[in-house]
Every structure is written in structure tokens, then in C-alpha cells.
Length: 259
Image 1 (cartoon, rainbow, N blue to C red):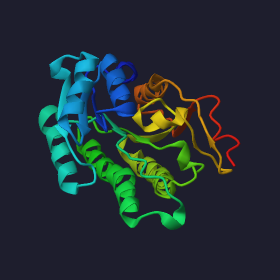
Image 2 (spheres, rainbow, N blue to C red):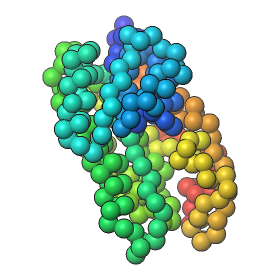
Image 3 (cartoon, one colour):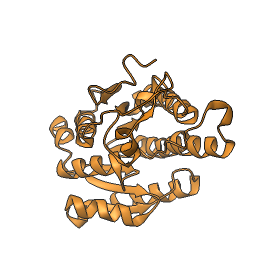
Image 4 (cartoon, rainbow, N blue to C red):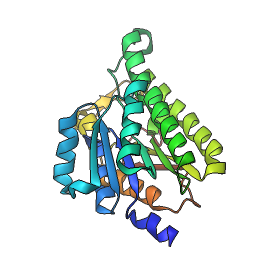
């Protein structure tokens, strides 16, 4: 019965960061369709409410909490709201992130580096840390953390040093959470997504810088393909875990054969 509950998400509580747009909004919609109760977190309340409205989910199955994942105090308040409203957390989709302004390594600004690292890495750590603590102490114990990595966790894009470094580091975070979560029924996996059609990839159709210095248009895939992959990972019983999963536009040039 537990495995069936995990597959359909009925009654379980998920937290999605960066839920106001892109992959976060698509995953939120998919989880709600599967019967999850979902906490939507993001910097601004209005996009979060728009996600809820588009999903047409019952009001008693959503909770909107504006939060800045780079702030320990804001993350503490977010998880306090989760605990107060639903008393537990079964899934964290650690999704909030930013790409940053492209620039060569020797011209990359310190402020841009800090902004990307603070969001993609420190923000992911802060949310995972609070989720881990809650999952460890709740009854029944355990839960799942899914970190949004990137194909850049494996192979870099040109002029994206901070994004690439942050996503490589997220892989280390994923492995550590997976290792340390074993005694507490806390599973952790990572999804690495390539060229899902979101605001972040809008410019790909007009061309992005390639490894040889040329600028070429790149194909994108429907963001629902990424959401469906997260649904699969989230729907497994805690006795099973997808450690790493890559999903990408089939003919994108910048992963297999990048260089």
C-alpha cells in the first residue's frame, strides 16, 4: 500500500522551489495532477499564484510561500510554514536557479559569480538541509529530495563558468545527501535537463555560442518531458531511487559530442 501511495502522490506533501515559472511551474502542475499537496516557493508571490490558477488545483492542496533561497532566514520561514500547515514533507524538488550573464572566464564579474553560486548551490544546500532535518524527525520518517542539476553538471557551455561550477557542485551535494540519508529513509536523486522550452532557453532558437566559437540555433523540447521525468522519480517508493537521470532535446548539439 505504501508503494501505491508513493506512485500516485495522494495525500503526500511536496515543496517546489522556483515554482513560479519554467520547469518549476511545469513540475508543480504535474504533481498536483498526481494528487500531491504542493508548497510553491519563489521570490515573488504573483507568479506562484499564477501557477496555481493555471493548474486549476483545489485551494486546500496548495500553499504559496514567497521565499528567497539564498537567505537562511527566509528558508527557515519557508520550512516553518510547511511544518505548521501540513506537519511533514515527503518531497523537495530543489529547482530554484539562475543562469547568469554569459561572459568569458577572465571577464566574469565577481558579483555575477556570487549571485549564481548563492542561488544554485547555497540555495539548494539550505533547502536540502532543512528538508533533511524535517524528513529525519517526522513520523513516518523519510522522504525524497530531487535536485535540479543540468547537463552542465557534466559538460560546460562556453561563457558560463559560474553556472557550470554550481551545477558540478550540486552533483556533490546530491551524492552526499543520498549517502547520509540512507539511515533515515531519505532518498536523493538528481535530474539533469537539457534545453527544455522555458524563458531561460528562449534565445536558443536564434542562436547560442558553441564550443568552436560559432553561434547556432539549438532545438528545445517541451518542458512537460522534464516534468514527466520528475514525476517518475518522485513516484517511486522510498525503497528505490533514481540517482541520476538525464533528459534532453534529442538533437541538441551541446552535450553528446560537445567540443
